[in-house]
Image (tube, rainbow, N blue to C red):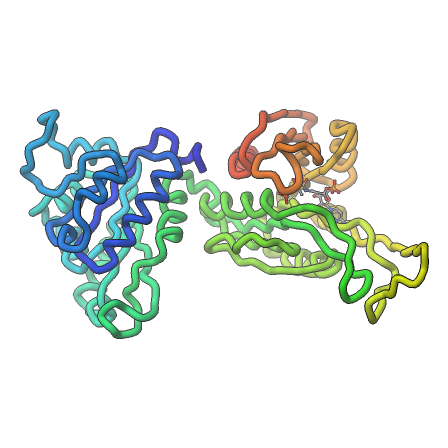
Length: 398
Ligand code: PMT
């Protein structure tokens, strides 16, 4: 995430609604991700949260008045509009939405917005009846057709006591949409299937064979692809990770469940990325009850699971097919063999068992082996960055 926000200038516009307190948390998320963030507040917003709060947290002056004096004599709202890489208006009140829809510039925020050329995310938040009012809906439609990015409000109990649409979405959801607005939309219209995590092969009702995959690598790919405009389905083995936002997640346990879920989606996928660490074998027999420890030695017979990726390779058509190779030795030779045997476009090789790459880590050190024989070794990177580097290669090839 750090690379997405590196050297980026984000402006947060805060309007006068009870949800203004949530913008403080949003500011923290954006700041933590490494962006420079500045805040513009309407006069009414200042009745809910003081400018000093935003000033102290952002470490930047807050623009709260169109005609305020400032240190460097710049026209703050125009300078900020020029510098901005993205703008978030959260909460966006009916009043500010109406001004934006009609090009009215009568305070610092509305004047600033007219001068912005970067993507603007608008997060309406108000009483349900106000939100559903035809004039408000008309204004929201106008903003959408003017190219503003509208984040639909959530539904639930509102501060005014009634229940319905109008809640400001959680800051982490707004943050996720902000990330997307800063990335290219190069997978728009593409359907991407990603598999992630381990599989578990039951021995008896309380024991299984598995591996240490956490799902981090596959979830990072699913998230990055969604941020870049793809319609993403993630088929995940058991993982503690939360579902990536806006991604259809199908949770499975065993390799045969994963195979069934993946095969069901092949026809509906343009790109398939198999990051999952699938068990190659499963116990031939699964005991109905917990096995007792009354023998000194025990032998479990295993039988082979279907090689899901190899099967997809046979039905590849003109889909793009990516595999991963988890190796402890001879990465080049083993990855190359899998690339050929499974009919892949790219195989991502990684050495597992290293403290900074492979299973469970936040970083990975990968080598891309392309079907034309090209090989690229990348330095250690966050898994999010590896995901984007892989998508960059796929984007170039498609
Ligand atoms: O989840 P993390 O903790 O973030 O860890 C990430 C990772 C190390 C699991 C990931 O980067 C990785 O290497 N995934 C592939 C693990 C693996 O099973 O590699 P393999 O070399 O055994 O399999 C090669 C390819 O065939 C893989 O794409 C695998 O999904 C696929 N396969 C394997 C066996 C099988 N029965 N069916 C398959 O589809």
